[in-house]
Length: 267
Image (tube, rainbow, N blue to C red):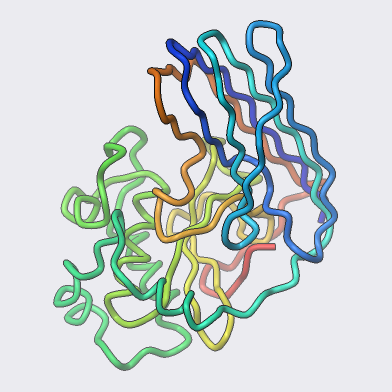
């Protein structure tokens, strides 16, 4: 499947700072990636430094002086990523509570709702379906500092909130789980999208309780414990304002069908 994705951001830098962004497609074995990225600040071309993180996540870092910065990224993705087995450390890491997926606060709740110690291959899909029924997608309903517990209590959220709750509940019942930032052809409203992944029977299965986009078309950007690891933009220093952002993602031809009850992994 051919997928074309792009992201454009305009950032007003009010004082010198260090910017970090994660918008480039993860360069995984098995995929053919053609891409370009330009960074222009007040007419001057700048070159960010690339830092490679876990799961082929790519972080771009730029020492940005005050001014108006424009970042443009385009990529064409072909092929199928080769799955990589999880290490023992990753399995242990993705069982632990984290900043936005506070599984330790949901142990009793999750055990009462789903049971504990009786994990089977269908558990992740059941948890994702439960979250999809329980939580309403409402744009702007959550704050950037809200985690899984706030989402459960409020009953509303956006894609990252749905994914955090799925991950927290799965970890609470003993299933290693993580989040991924993706480009999502077919997603409405179009934006960076977040999904959950659960490790079952030696493979990471992708879960999207929002059902906003077919999982076979997703393109991985970043992978980690929660939103703190997959944020598309981070600032270290002077004040900034994100004045505009445009995301696009398309497949060549019709979108694939997705039966959200069946296991799928991100390409």
